[in-house]
Amino acid sequence: MISRLNLASDPFRNRALPWTLAVAVSAVSLVALVLIFGRYNEARAQADLSDKQVQAMQAQQKELDRQADSVRQNIPAEQRLPLEAARALVSRKGFSWSQLFTDLEGFMPADVRVSRINVREVAQVGDQTRADLDLTVVGRTPPDVTGMLDKMNNSGTFSAVPVTENQKSGRGESGYEWLLRVSYVQRVRRGGGQSAEGDVTASARAQATSNDAGGRE
Image (cartoon, rainbow, N blue to C red; front, side, top):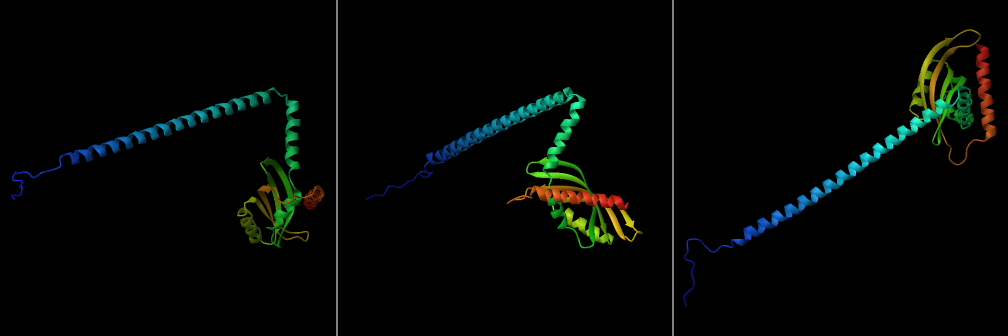
């Protein structure tokens, strides 16, 4: 039996396989490009929609601000003062003196005492009451007060900046008196707040402290 031999110069080859692979790769690449282009268009459409929404909100805010300014301008001057006083009264009603003293006592060293507290401004922000205070303290030495300031500024409740420092002498008093400008954040106490009687007592205590300090000057 005679075996069949391939005597041609080129052996038998599967010429269709490379073309099939090339077509398959091209098809997959084309599908991937179509998907990527579709995702890009979708993301761009969402970005354009977000930009339009932001622009609409900004325009609405400007219109509200314009209307608020128009209302304020139409209010007579003699009516503005009572409104501002009413807003200030509402903000101050949310301010707890007893909680202020409790928060202060956590930072007061044994050699530092409060001689005067003046609440300059009170604002209600969410569940927080924020107040600007003028706080006058007397310390035995300057490091006593500066150490207290460092602790207050790292607490997140107080932010204190020294305004003046005077050495007290005479009348049997000694030490250093500091006037501090304090920003105070009063948070709502969970699990029960201070009673109204406690706030009245603390407010009277603050008033007495201020009066005593004023009488010594």
